[in-house]
Image (cartoon, rainbow, N blue to C red; front, side, top):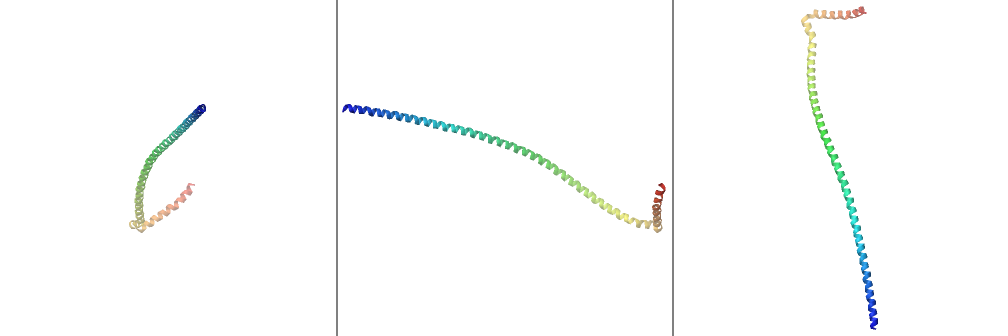
Length: 157
């Protein structure tokens, strides 16, 4: 019975050793899986960081490009404003010249109207100065000149 107890003790010890060894192997494989999982997560994290940094770099380059475009457009806009101001000034100068010419035109029209009035008064003055005989003589002279001209043209031909 003592021999059986020793044998049983020995079997239990062997069973415990096998259980311990099995448990250690299980623990070892768990650690291995945990390390592999950690390494996979770390690798994924590094890939994500690299991708993110590339994306951020591309966005920064695009933003810089847009800033340069904006500065270029602002410079062009400033040039256009200067040119527009120049044309506005020229337009104002032209409008002032037009106003001055319109005033001269108005003065000329007034002068022409007064000259027409004066010329309309001339026949009356001629009659007053020359008398009716002088006016008749002037008319006869004009008719003579009018009649002589075609005769002279015919003679010249």
